[in-house]
Image 1 (cartoon, rainbow, N blue to C red):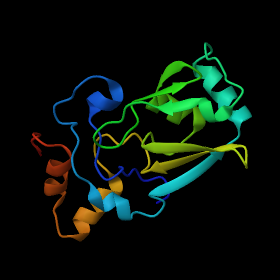
Image 2 (spheres, helix red, strand yellow):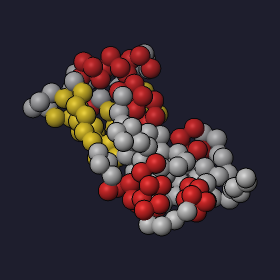
Image 3 (cartoon, rainbow, N blue to C red):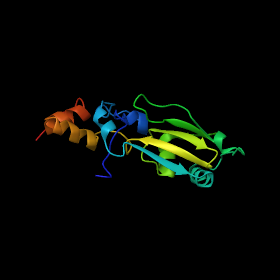
Length: 162
């Protein structure tokens, strides 16, 4: 399942990703995700492609001659999602950068390889990370947990009605 969602080992809260709290969309453990295929992925981006993608969402950026100075990761959530980055002097959310660069998740680290002249992003997980992790749910089912138990784990405080 190449497109299954998986967290970075902990799901993310709705508030951290979308800015508004939802009582049952809080961060919960999903450690099984760290064993998923393609949990860690890298993506290389040329400075030209990086700049073009960022300018689509943030046209007021100022670019230094040295691409190594273009991006600084600011804050991250407890679950590992990048909340804010500074790109060309402008504040950008981790989710916005994820979308414009087509990264697998906003749980990422980045380095600039001056020799290869490319940014190398390393992502953890796949998707926005909020709610049920398909990979984590599969692992809990394989451990013998029922669908009700799995839903209660990923959506705490909810009640399943039939």
